[in-house]
Image 1 (cartoon, rainbow, N blue to C red):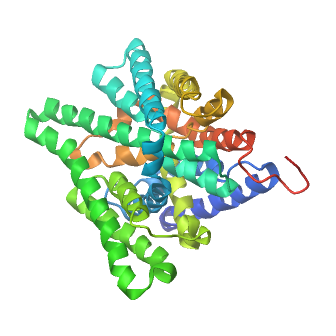
Image 2: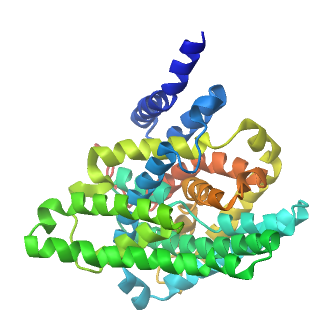
Image 3: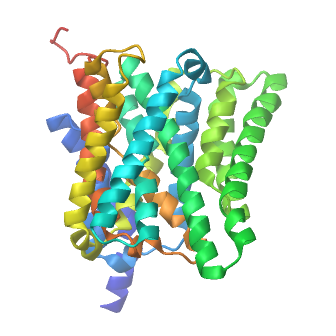
Length: 397
């Protein structure tokens, strides 16, 4: 019996990935829902059934693979960001700043009214500012979406994730300062860490194209080279205890502005990228437990609704001055719903400080699970309603 249990435990991750993939394909085929909506749900249910099989430390192989998967998505996400857009239309940046700031303020206020300690409320509010680049980009690629709403969603997600990461690191810095009494240590885990993360990504974003150009290999080998660059960057970021999230996002941004062209067929980094994406979404939900989800369900549900309304209304309010209709502004705000993967991996990266924030934020567990399933669906619906996805066969505009 012991051998059977040990074997079942060792097969936990492969079984979860296979089941998640099959469930995602079936869901998408028969309902049209995004595949990723079910990946996390399968991971969560299997983690409850076999908790020992899905326990993973911050230094585990599964955690490293999940960070690599997210790094590939963030590289591609950063590559899709055009800084010229923000220079031509600064109202996009203003919208991102406004909706992020309003979300932070409202979530913090509600958390404090729910009798959450001030520092925990600040952490929760900083994480609620973000939207998940992984969830949004996977839905956009799956739906083959293109247009004004699609591009604005991508840029707004990038803006609010960078802001969320900055605020989160600052709050964690104060947390460290409060427990250790060392202000230099607190600063080193906030602003300095972010600066070094961005610098590493920028250097690699310049170095990889510079190495490939003399070989004439950008067209043939670019995807492979950038995938290996992401792998190196993730491992290096973990070794130096900096943020692989910001580093890989900056890597993609720098590569784009180095005039590197990636073909449409190379989206998602091929079959390996697809496999790692399934693992990523399964991993993100497997870190949650029923106890935390149920404990934070009431407050988490209120916060999900508040976050959704604030982001949607803030983007819609600035839509006309930003050059789009109120309707498209509304749909852009709706598409910002996902946030789970970004939040999970950001929390995992605080474990090396000895800070287990998931235990402090039960409401966040409920928010994460709910938006793991509903967030991608809302993004998909918004893009369809904006008429930026191809019409199904037999349907016109």
